[in-house]
Image 1 (tube, each protein chain N blue to C red):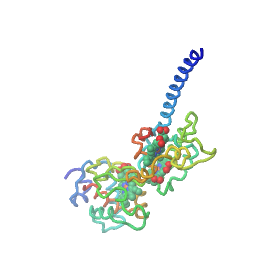
Image 2 (cartoon, rainbow over the protein chains, first blue to last red):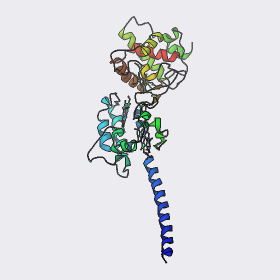
Image 3 (spheres, rainbow over the protein chains, first blue to last red):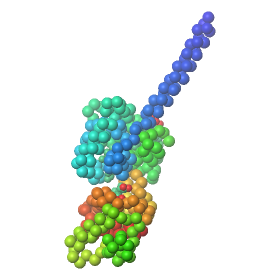
Image 4 (cartoon, chains in turn orange, red):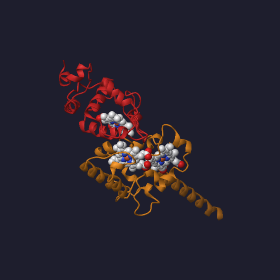
Length: 163
Length: 138
């Protein structure tokens, strides 16, 4: 009697576990993919000093704030003419992490209204990299936290998996 | 004398030849030549040697972590450089990167940014022409 009930239950639980595993993996896949910049102007103006960061990695308010002061861009002058700035701002905000239909996981844990300028200071980014050893950051080919491509080889294609 | 050389008498006189350097690149040299002459009537042509010195010298007026053009572009212009954020920069020498200096607006934009970064001021037309002469020579 009992075994009769337990057996299907066990099978059910096993099936559930498998489903959960699959779902878990599917989710990890989503976590890793951030559509890369496809706009030519943005690639050209925002991709020569560092990776052209995926627009979904920051909220729209961050991009607006950053684009409003490119002359003082982390100590560099990244300024462009007004038309170019307007076009890039439009592209970045339309594809921002909080734009309709984007719901970027990297923005989790942010307080409403925040407009940080660094992806590397987002709470979720910090959590994802908590276990990365210190020596990895100081490796000569890394140099900076913002050098995503040093560790995520396919970052320019939008993939940020663990390798 | 080829057509390129006719347009660039000054550089050719200095013994330079420019593979694949045409169109907007020529216009730029012509423009820098005119500007350099306007600034100094005694201007006698661009010099790759002065360009190399500009490229390699450690200047004082700019940002402390980028005292020279080589801080980002590296010691050898025929190999890749690296930005402050760690991204590779394609070589600057025309022999290795033949598509460089073919977009005048791009060249001007980066001269403005990088001279300010390294020298704390914009480069003069003569300095820009000298530097380009050095990059075209190698």
